[in-house]
Image (cartoon, rainbow, N blue to C red; front, side, top):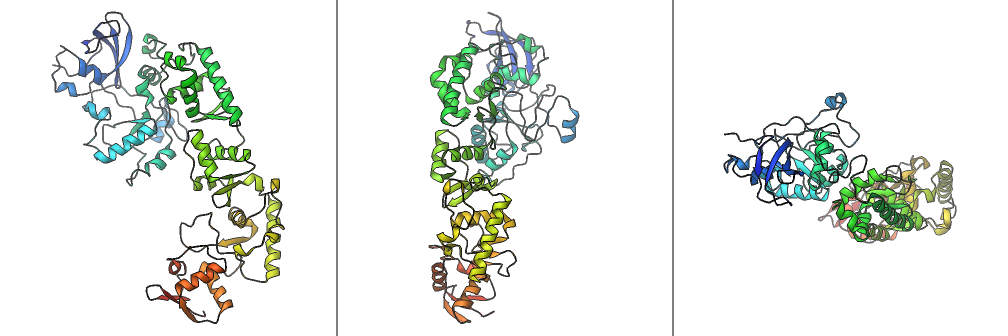
Amino acid sequence: MSSQLSVGDIVTLQKPHQCGGFAREILQLSGYFGIIRCLTCGEISTKYISDIKRNVKNTGFDNQENETLAGASRMEIYDDEQLRNNPLVSTSEYSINCVPRPSYMADIKTNSVEGERIDNFFSERCFKIFREFCSRSKLVYMKDLYGFDFGKLIRVRGIGVGKVGQIKERWSEYSTKPLDLDKGMLIISRNIVDVPRRAIAEVMGADDPLNSQMDTRDSCFNTSLRGITDLNEGKAGIRQILAAHFQTLHGYSNINILWSAAQSSLPMFLNDNAINSPGILWDLLNKAFEGEYVFSEPHIWQKKPDYPQNVVGIVINFARQQGGIVTREQIDDYFSGIKINAPINSNILKQELLLFYENRKFILSETVDLSQARCDAVTRALDKLFTLENVAYIVLRDITVEWFSHLPEIRGGIPWTALLLQEVLRVCPKIGYRVIFSGLDGQSLDTLGAAIVPDKSDVKTFADVVHRFCYEKCALPIKMPTEKLRITLREAGMLDGNELIYNLHKALKDHRFGFTDENRTVKILER
């Protein structure tokens, strides 16, 4: 008795077709899907093979066999050499267009394939976390037949993409287990579940005879867009929504706020074309408005922007509208309004297109204008300051407002701050000066350092600065409470508030500082 469904089999499903008929003929089996035809009205539709088997009657399968996924195919995993040599597979920095290899039997439990359980391959808790992660990323997984390792991310044409960098970054938030992206697991868009008929057409390719059998209205995102109901009216409505966004957001929109607006103003268009998720609407946009707008998922621009096409670019665009300076709170509120997660501070600063201006406040690098000539002017101003003061270091908090007037003027008359000067020294090392911090790892960039020193100075560390300060202020050696030393440094401007209140001994790991009495007392040597 065969345990495999075959083309030509007549099956009777538990739920009738909309015409009232129960009997269906299997026309084709491909991957995890079967193409079936209603014997009453002749309409062709798509079903999961597991659904066909679970609902089949009087075909000779027993209950145990009904738990087996018949006719399953496995999407191929390509190594780099195969990718270069396979004309069906195109690669980019982030994604691989994947095609299926021929179908064959696979003894996989349907519940594992459908994502309900995978106890045998992964811990239950870890799998729940991964399933949630996939859901948030609009991704689903397919299990490789040779083991449950994570594999290359793939993109099924026209359905969606997962980016390697984003997956790695997000996964690290959920698990300490390394994410191996070289073998084993394939990740594809969840839209393959939402629109299986279109997905099959895309994966199998335009030349496959199955495409000619499919109802073009269900495959509404084909190249010609002929299957879309009221396409012109829908495009006009989308244009109107985007025009409003471009007006208020200075040439920007994204799929999340577009989807929200379209649900309110274009419900019939979405319903008639089975557009029931932002991902499907995104696919339509890319085909219907190709060349008209600029797309970089999930972002949409009226024209190519003069800033990076990512969240940092969105911050730049927003900051320009605020005069070049924007606060952390403003960024969070803005991104909440456009329904996108706001970037963290380190990501905002990573490309050095924005700098800290004050605590929780950013300024555009283009506003400061870090040209070579202006950096040279900063060097000359610091040279004069060190010559005038005749010191080995200068405490940042001691610099007067009057001295900042010697620095190049900032666009819009924005005044300099000590933190901005610190940031400029960080991103422009050719200025020839650097900031010495307290010495503890992980100190925030929006915290002022202890002092500025010339690059060629013999003052290299925080301990050097503190020892030089103590040498100038009191006779060494000297013994004092650790907290008294910390308060003295705070009064001198090297520390702020409760900074290093319990960790001064860690910041002064140097033979010239001897801590005793459980670090409550310190003896400072002369050398």
